[in-house]
Amino acid sequence: MFGYLRPDKDELKVREYELYKSVYCGLCKHLGRDYGWLSRMTLSYDCTMLAMLSMALKGECPTVHRGRCVVNPTKKCRFCTSDGTSFQLAGAVSVIMSYHKLTDTIEDSGFWKKTAARCLQSLLKRVRR
Image (tube, rainbow, N blue to C red; front, top):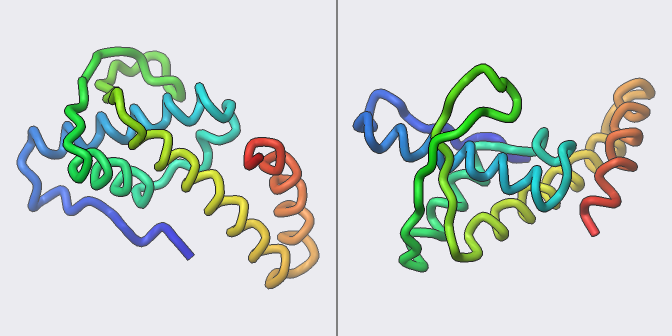
C-alpha cells in the first residue's frame, strides 16, 4: 500500500512548500511526456518525495519554470525540471507501484472493483513495459 506520505504544510516555509509543489507539477509533466496521459493519474506524494530525496542525494539542482497546468489550463503554476535521473526514477516507481496496486485489488476485491481494476491494468500494462 502506498499513499501515506503527505507534506505538513504548517511546518514548511512558503518557499519550501512552493518548491515541493513545483516538483509535484514537474513530475506530472514528466509522467505525461514519458509514459502518456494515463500515467498522470498514478502521481502521488510518495513519488514526489522520492524525486526530492533523489535530487538531494545526487546533488542535482532543480530549475523552476512557469507554465500552465496540464490538468487545469487556466491555472498558472511553477514546475521543476532536472537534468539528472530523479524524475525518471520517481516516474518509473509511480507507474510500477500503481500497476501492482491494481494487481492487489484484483486479487482482494469483489466483482465490480475487480472488473474496473482489470480494465485499468490493461491500460497500464503497455506503459509499465
